[in-house]
Image: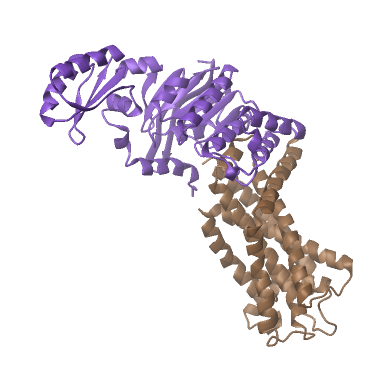
Length: 267
Length: 336
């Protein structure tokens, strides 16, 4: 096998290990998912009547935002997993093995795709229970899920890099919330971007969390006919703009994280 | 010395102002065991981390199985197995899954990895626990699994960092047997330990280190000759007898008699074992000195240190706990 094939093989071995761990310790999954479920219920029922959305069905509007939020939260799982691994003796074992240097990270980001697929599924079921519906075609719905997953994958690399910068798993949890909360709230996730004051409005319009939400909303058919066309180019072409972010984020943060890990290896 | 499988020259490692290793030279011929003996914080783990490519030395060079450590770390990793002080196994995975994973990462292939995992679990007496998560294992079982992990790919060079620290005596002896078995198959081994007895039992050659520096080097016998074969330790009932007892001990001792007023104990290095011991007991008895406690024992690491450095292991760097944390901490530290 060539070095590239070995890299993929090692990635799968590490990913398999992480998935076994999710399976054995499902509590982690439960807790990470509880907060978005709580958001569905809180926003859907508490604020639902006071937020003006096109089409007047807030829960239908809300779900795309919740999906985006869920996969962003999923990325903190990547960070926490890596930060925890770095603390454990097992990382010394990995570092002394003739394995691919990047596999610990590529395996982790890969296994988190599986994790995110699971969490999207659970959020979809929650959504269906509170009255959200897929109103577009199945193909478009699959495209929405796919877009959410690649977006989550890209963000996993950001969190992987952050996890390698901080000294302990406790810190990464706090650090990641400081990144995630502004990103998810200054966006069109829970309220229409148009309703925000400047300069938050401009930030929200160009925030990739907004565009992935907008794209998901469109692909699930959750934008009612007659809804006003957004002003910003990013929101008019949300799939394209989101994909640009995905590619750019992976291109920047994957090498950064791998470089950081490799340096960590041989201080 | 080209025949050395592990060959290190002038290893220096500094962490900021702290010098963890200070020009350490090591040389281990093929199929032998070198024991690196020292107290917590002496630099043992740092030395192992450097030789297993986990840490870059500040200065110095080394070859492992003829491969240069600094220029070809990836190649070195193909020849080595490492079992650390803190069992490097995944708690959530089962014993089998751990070994299978390590086999795959050593690139043994799917079926060979599985086969090897089963074989090792059987050999290390873990077959019954094979499919249980490691977190249900006892300390001894974890260490055995960790050691099994180190030899999955049958590496010709093995590094064991305090393999028996924290184990009960039975598990320790069991692990010694496994280690002897491995080396009888031609493995070259560098073993660190804080137990004189362990080094004596296993090592062909012993390097004693303190503050990252070699302070003695030789076989167990030559070291013991250097520091005196055994120790006679007595505790007198009456402090008035201390001087008389000291005089008697001085007649047989090969070193100075030490007196600890806190415990009323006297300690002297001797040679001649049981014969000398009987003679001392006889003399003390005829002098009418009443004893609270008496014993003949082999020198401990503390005695070695006392003789070689003039201070015990406890003086060598704060208290034991913080020294240990410091040693472990060097592995975890994130560099800027």
